[in-house]
Picture 1 (cartoon, helix red, strand yellow):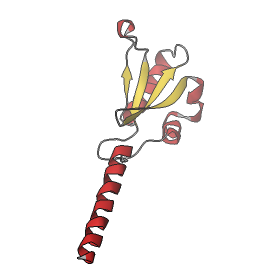
Picture 2 (cartoon, helix red, strand yellow; picture 1 turned 90 degrees about the vertical axis):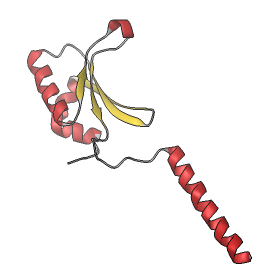
Picture 3 (spheres, helix red, strand yellow; picture 1 turned 60 degrees about the vertical axis):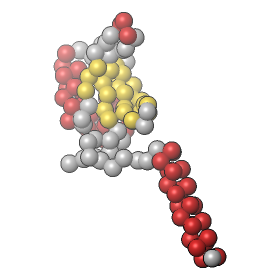
Picture 4 (cartoon, one colour; picture 1 turned 90 degrees about the horizontal axis):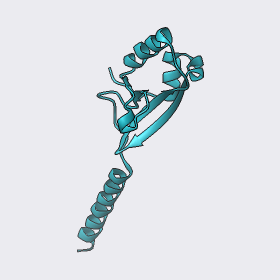
Length: 113
């Protein structure tokens, strides 16, 4: 089964009080959207394990800190899980519009002949 994940769905699965522990941001890069969940403070073993388990059920993962690369520890959850319908990018929408306009121009041209 596939689904598009929303912030509301994350709060439903992780619990409404999760925002006490995590900052939740949506990040889009190269037409790929993910939610980034950054701990506000040290989570502790039990809270971390519970969050990690629930993030995994949403298709997400934990990203370890890498000081050399400047990466803070966080969780990521894809906005679209595998098989879910992908929202077209602005470029794809423009290409479709241009193709439609060309088809209409061709029809008008054929009609005028």
